[in-house]
Length: 124
Image (cartoon, rainbow, N blue to C red; front, side):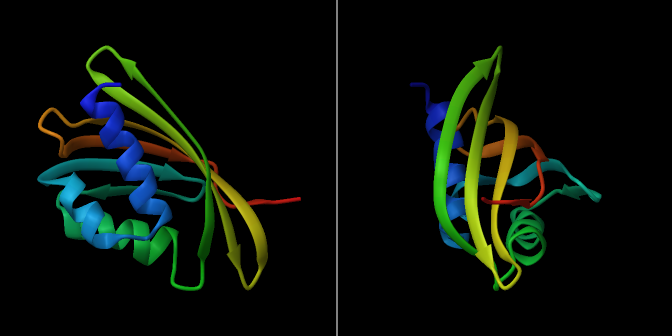
C-alpha cells in the first residue's frame, strides 16, 4: 500500500472519529480543497476552513458518527482515490453517508483534494 493510500485511509479514520487534531496533521497549510454535496459546492484553502466545512457544516455536533463502515483505496495515475461509507445517527434518525475523494499527498500531507458526497441516505 502506498503512502498516499495510507493518507486516504487516515483521512477517512480521522473524519469518522471527528478528530480535528489528526485531521490538521493530515492537511497541508495551503490545501486546495473542493467538494460537492447534494445542495452545495465547497471550497477551502487552509486547514481551518476544511475543518469548519467537515465538522461545522457536514457533520455537526448532533451527528454521531457511529461507524466507519467501509474504506476502499486505489490510485489514478498520480492521484489517490479513497471511498468511504459512514453510519450516522442524529435526532432525525439513522443514515448512511458515502463519499468519494481524490487527493494528492506527496509528503504525507494532503495538498489537493476533491470530494463528492452522497448526502445523508436513510439507513434501513
